[in-house]
Image (cartoon, rainbow, N blue to C red; front, top):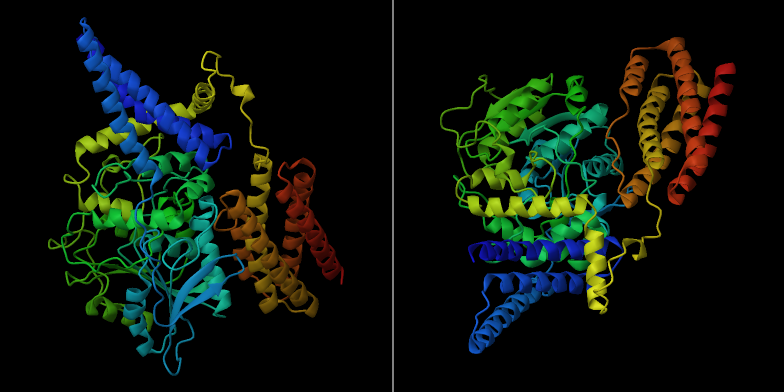
Length: 637
């Protein structure tokens, strides 16, 4: 009897996992929301019924068997009704956030549409504008941030505060796989060009510091100064190629919610399908609810502004492993600011301090709300106007600080990922640290970990397809027939191959490098031919890279945020060259680079799989050949 009860309990625990796996399997083979939802609920109901039968022993007397049947069917009906209602009915979605005073919209060449506010003095006296990068990712407060950072306009700065792609009042992507650090860096560079600034002053908070660091590594010549308040660490995070929720999806009762569990399973299979099932506004509401469920912070903090970015917050953020090495070579002055009430650990600030060559640390005490105090604004204004704020010299934090000293172990965060736990970035980590030991409770973390493990095993071993096929067979009355996964229709669209991805990354690195080299030629070239070729490279490779970035976003291909190591070394060599030597070095280097790019592009045209990428390669081949001809002609002349 005891063994039967244990078996029944295990089957009951498996019911939601089996339902989610079947739901994901149906989505994997291309079923729509109406189909995969019904299949998932049917599998859940079937496994639940089996578990109830095992848990409730079968009496010997007839009335007892009837009572058992009524009990099992009653519990089954109540459970299935409740889960179905929660799964099929979206949570109440608040109205879209209203616009803020002075709100405008950038329509960038990257395809992003970003809401922003510009604050400027009557007479701009500082040539480099200030751009604020909010945290999260996906948690912005356009109204509050523009009111606070707009006060820098009194020092003669133009100030731009914007919601990053997928957050706040900015546009959302149809495919959540397009979100990521590389896209944010590309958007920031497009913003710089749009506002026609030679260089930017970057002011960033928590996750925004990662964005600032990645932009600084990719475009060191375009940053005048950078300020990082309570920065998130440089540790590489999960790759966004497999988007997964990074926290336990909670409902109004602060417990796992069937609908958000379904979304987390769908995100593993096809983020676009997840978005079709639960739209952006619904996930935004869930993120806001999750933030409200935090325990009270150690210090008063401003309430988060409306319009969170649910899907962009759920996207994994890749911090390139080479980022530290790239930052070591930058010479941009950087100020790191810490306060007593920071949620990010002191060790994260120390990592930036040790990595960046020209950096200093300021401590602004425990005034509230953190990140919006007069003390912080004074330090910010002093540094951006060329002064040196009072530096905090010690490696260890002050005794009064409430911030954690070191990053907490990653297992305190319930990752929706079957891979080994890794450190999560942004609001999730902050949430875990603030509530360590209290919320989420240990039992909930254990349940979530077990769920992730079982669901991950099912997906990794492709058992979702047989489950889906079996569910279809059962629904059509053919349960006696063994499931045949070969009969399940596959997607007909051609996914990018490794060859496609490699070419996209290679051509993107080349574009970044050759734009930098072209700009150098425009300024340092000694002949009209060299200057003209440099201008052509800047214009053409900028246009080409815009198409490459857009295509990569559509196909979910993660692009690097900077040129390759060899390309960066070549740009450094050109910067140190001058006169006729520069002309010769530039032409010979660009001829070699274009020959290599042409060879890689011809390989993609002949061996690529995805038609969109091959078409882009065909257009790039013509442009590269024109560049090579012009370079060789300039070298001969």
